[in-house]
Image (cartoon, rainbow, N blue to C red; front, side):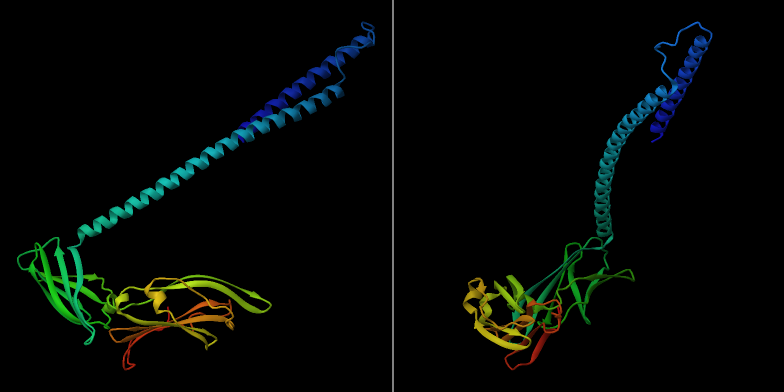
Length: 332
């Protein structure tokens, strides 16, 4: 922008000089005519107003040309700056990623626990108990190092060689919630505590807990909800499935119940029935009866309008053969 101002000033100065010289030449010509030294005939010296008009147009053209050149140069510079800025942002993101990776590595190096793992050795579905073995490996240890696993009030001493691996086995409730676990490391009269992750409930490893894979389309036509699509029940531990049924509901009303055991075991899609009297929602209530004697229920809203709260009617629960509630998840 400063270069444009300099160019304009130079053009204006030149224009002023040209106008001054033109006026001076024109006045001298008039003086010679008045003294009779020259006749009033056509001369190469133009009148001042003609000179000014020509110069005005020339100045405008020069200013426009200079402006276009300057804007073009600025546009190229801005494009270059934008490219440099994008490159700087990319480099910054890459540096942030590297710094985060380095930070995590430093934190891992500072931790004394190198490995914490567990596996279910055996499960008894009748007693609803599971034998779980835990494994711990330390980065640093001493001759008097002792490690204890604290698991929801249960203290489990881990034994073995601290230089290799420490282990311990505990009998846990399949439907107990084990979401508060930590390792207590004692050495030289000092104690170090590290929180560890547990799955929460062990039954997820042994029961066919369901989810849905769906492809639905819905809309409203003449005040009524229209729909179509298909779905599939997705689950593990299918060898424990005895039967699978799904009930379609709308507004709390049961519309239809289907046996989809074969489709579930074959991992096939099930098409939605046509002509269901759907109101503001279409809700599925899935029931899986297991060979091990449990009933798994999952109710989830699949289609609903914008004014409906889908969390009001959703739940997931497990009961035993006598109908006793063993586990429940009220809302997702």
